[in-house]
Length: 211
Image (cartoon, rainbow, N blue to C red; front, top):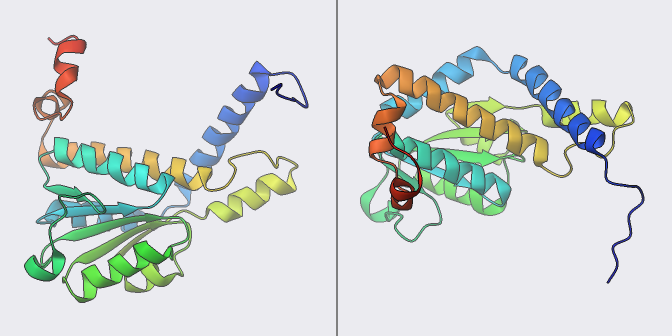
């Protein structure tokens, strides 16, 4: 089966998209509320345990964030995994649920967040593209990326191929989460060597060079 292309592959096109992403990420970073960022970091530092939650590609961001929190020695679970504790039996007092959701209203995510807060007693942190949403209404902390505003601006400028679907939010959320990890390292006095000691990838011990 032949693949029909409207144009030839272009190195410059790909680079232009990368530069456009970097430019808009810089702009959207400037729109974040400083108090919200500080509140989010404080919630993670004070948490007894952290539960991360997301669906689809947002779920990949949630899992990646959970991995780094574990490397920091913070007890962390990914909602949906088989080892998740029973919140009705054990409760979530002192725990934080971090929800990654562009819409802030995806059914399963919204239902779990509500159950975790109302039944388990957890605090809810939401990373979202829509603060005015079902999860936003119950969240104790919100990190809001106004992605739709930036995407409309790009479309108005004629760039309709930039960051399709939820790509812009997912990329912004991933970079934000990694930046938070750096802040947590500083706050806890942990460096990369200490994180490596509890790295989950045992195969990496044999494949990657060590000092």
